[in-house]
Image (cartoon, rainbow over all chains, first blue to last red; front, side, top):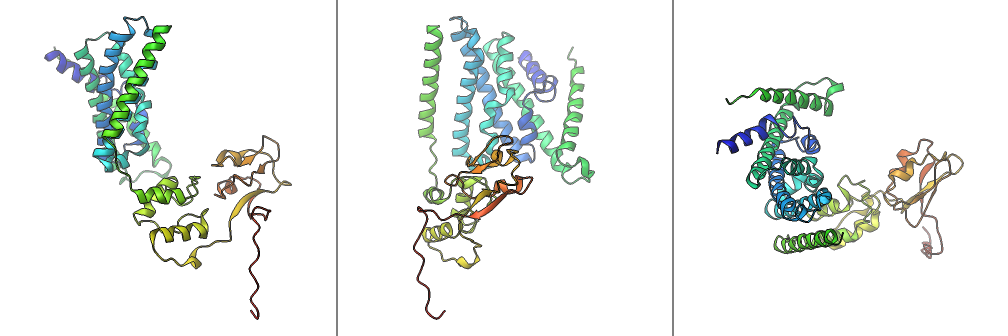
Length: 193
Length: 177
């Protein structure tokens, strides 16, 4: 049990997918203008990443490795990810039309979110067990959601701040992202011994 | 080789089947009125109305947040058709309509920079670098995107030239008017 807890903390905070591994920066910048859509995007991505990691493990161990097809890894993983995203899009459109409107183009773009494919490839390369893979994917996705929420909250306050004209809009958001990244580097000093 | 093809085919068809079932299960009934309005719109998604393309404008017209006169390329004809479809009356005098217009290139000042080609939503502009461009009249929807892009002001909006396909018999002149 402690292993899984440590894995969760490690993936969500210490090796945060956005701020430490620099994956998935497109939605990080694109959908972080308000808290509601950031939370929706985070949850949708969490669902996709967890499912994609699990599916990738099954593909790798039941199809690619036994039949010596490891060179088809990226192709098959992208196929599964695209199908999962399509499924999530249908579910969101049916169950939460407002969220569907708010996420707009970024919802189908989860397919090309490099965090999803990156995590699926990482878990396979690390040769983790199935449960470890799921926890790793879920933890990373939680980290993604957490960072999206923090960044959206900060940007909401930043919108009210008096920023010099040359820095207003995207530039100050990039500075904010780098400061947040620096802060997350501090988690590397966590020690549980 | 064979097993790779077979396994990918199987995987693809399984996922496709799954998505097909999910699409039936999670089917959302779209507003039929929106679809009907969208069918009337020009469909070039030029964005002059300020909505994300013709589907966005159609949805806004259907829920009443946009007037039927919102579409500049559609002009009076579209406004009239939409008003008839929605059963509302509009004052067509408000619609600034100089008749349908399409883009035209002034050949003596075109420098062949290709900028207008890149913004044309219907690929109606023909040309290459340092070659004088021209507009394919049948393809131009008159969205006007290219006008601002031209560095030499060679692109202008011109009334659709009268051809055999367009010519209509002029209305009889009013006696004593």
